[in-house]
Length: 330
Image 1 (cartoon, one colour):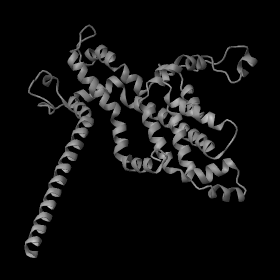
Image 2 (cartoon, helix red, strand yellow; image 1 turned 180 degrees about the horizontal axis):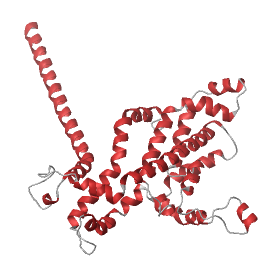
Image 3 (cartoon, one colour; image 1 turned 30 degrees about the vertical axis):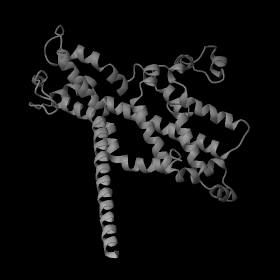
Image 4 (cartoon, helix red, strand yellow; image 1 turned 180 degrees about the vertical axis):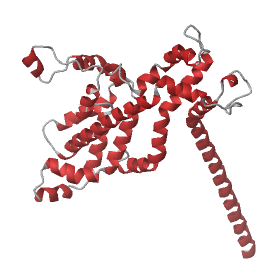
């Protein structure tokens, strides 16, 4: 009887292991199929842009071509570079984005540190208003912000001295610089929240030791706290860089005549339809093929997002680590 039971138990164990292996195999297949499917949905627009950039004009009407062109060409890239005036445009955009990113990161870090470490009357109400800025649509602030920077004045000082309503800062970089430097810029509410959550998690003994050594609040922030805040600094800096680079709200509202990538990309379809026949040597009265115009526009969009792709390839590992160590997940 014992031998029969032992054989029966062994058979049950083998059956259980087989079922577990089958379940694990099915789960692995499902998981990889899900990951591949989501990855394809995310990567497909980029792959299609690369395909359009390398596709020759004669392949547009070939129904047998799906992603890989039959005739490869770099003419689309050359035309898109000319239409965008790409290199001066990219340099101007990167300078603007870097300065606003730097100002927004430092000002948001200072504000987040203040909310995390200093208690004063109304601090909770002010922080609730900061959180509210994350949820308020930017379009609702368009008119007051436009009027504010059209006649910019600080406490009425300019009007008191000159008698004029204020300084017109529109069509300049000053509105973006001022809002970024005062932690009121694009997504600044989120940045302040990230820094606040991180600074709240740091031990207060660090600051107490600095105070004993005679350091004040500002010196403690810049010499002690900020060097320890590398993860949120990198997270906010990358968020700010990407969002400022892609922003069309502030650029179209305050800097509609500036040489910036979002404005050029927004006007690219119209400019391509107008100037493509001239670049092709067809004359000013000729009309470009709409499908070829769409091909050049897609190529221009690829060139516009290329700096962000390169940035992601270099910093994606550090970015993920920084997000894990900040207050975003805590």
